[in-house]
Length: 363
Image 1 (cartoon, rainbow, N blue to C red):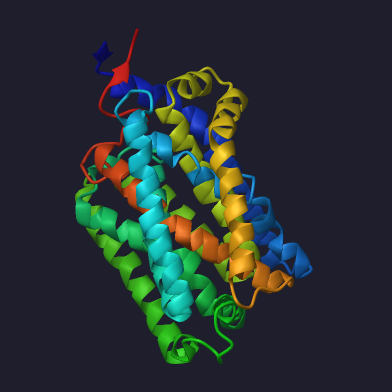
Image 2: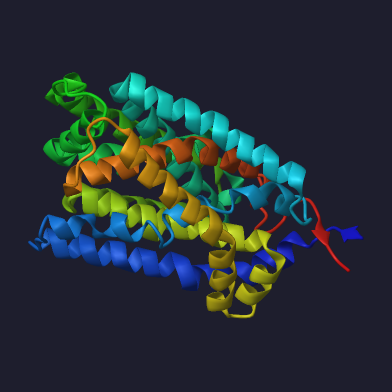
């Protein structure tokens, strides 16, 4: 038998738990590192790659490894062969097309990766702010939510381009160099004119968002202050922390952990553990569910290493190879998360439901 769940009850139970276990620790780490690097902290180049290395098994890669269970859990039922096969076919088609583009036109594939990441990471922050953030944001209209998505997704992708263009160019050239021995890719992207234009566009989005959201939230404008402070903190983080380190940490400890918390809400047993103040048990269930496809993704990474023409063992090209795999997995993953957003009401003037949003199974 299936019965409607109480959205308000779930919301009241889970929001404090996720804030304590996920939101505040990630904020603290970002703020601490921002202050440390602003004060002059320097770390060896090899150490900047450690968050990406850890993300192979810790939050980063695994956060998309339960996608095959998501459609069924959204409907409040156990996964079946049909729902799993649908997700598998989605991955085969979109990931295959993305990898083909890398082999045919690596610079274009990199641009696509950046654009998809802006959308996906922005959508992740939009969901997190609506559900895990301050009360009152559910009054924002669709235009404000779209602007918030662009702003928050643009921070990790555009701010490093503004402040660390050489490092950004190095990542691009390493990725393109895996497939082509040609010269620098997309030289115009790193020109002062393009970078200033990108920065101006990001600032314009921020100002327009402030204007639109203030109009949406008449009487509740105080809820914008925490969002603004968090956004400014992230801007400073990406402006002072070396980009490989900053993006690696953001991927694993900010974006992925928030999505893992969202997935735990879809697992009835995991959600119960979280509401009972036992996040470790909830995380263990997620790790069990994610382990098989995380292992498969690591096998695919090895296969990609053997398949690309110019694979090398230096840290830069190895990171680039990992990003190629992530780009191929992100396209179908972002598509599925967009489906989650639609099902969970992210684009409606109501707080998204933390658990299975249509119906919950009861015995």
